[in-house]
Image (tube, rainbow, N blue to C red; front, side, top):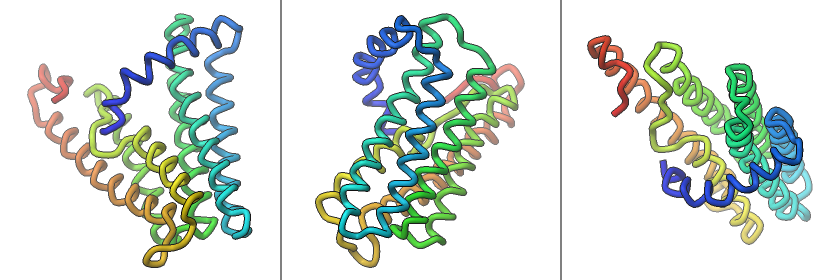
Length: 217
């Protein structure tokens, strides 16, 4: 995942911000909930951007900003929980549920808004949800979490944010789709490739002796 290369740089700025928020009395769960609100609002803006062509680029740009805020808060809540010493299974469960709803709001908002054909949109959201499911299913099988593959959640959000910038500059369609439509197609194909990568990894781990099954490649 390309976002892994940016992780050390992101943490350099994320940790002080997360600690400041925690010291101000803000709870990690509140940050998680706010991230979902931003995702839902971004989905609405993506949806309405297709209905108002004249203001479409501005709406898409605003939606991209909300996606960025969703991504920021989603990264902060975990850092805050560890800093406060309140990491728990309940918080982890809530974080995953919120992430799946956030993914659905953002991606469905884009193709419901007409930026991609519904067939492409359905293929993409199925790939995204299956990919995310496989990441945690490995843990359910006592293999440890596995989030490998070419496109993870952070990569998807980065691609969507880049597509909103391109759309704001050049909203015209290229071969029948705008930059948002093409990025949804790319995410869909990449997500299904990632799903098969994770399936192969989990299957290989299940075939290992029990003492080695929990080790990652």
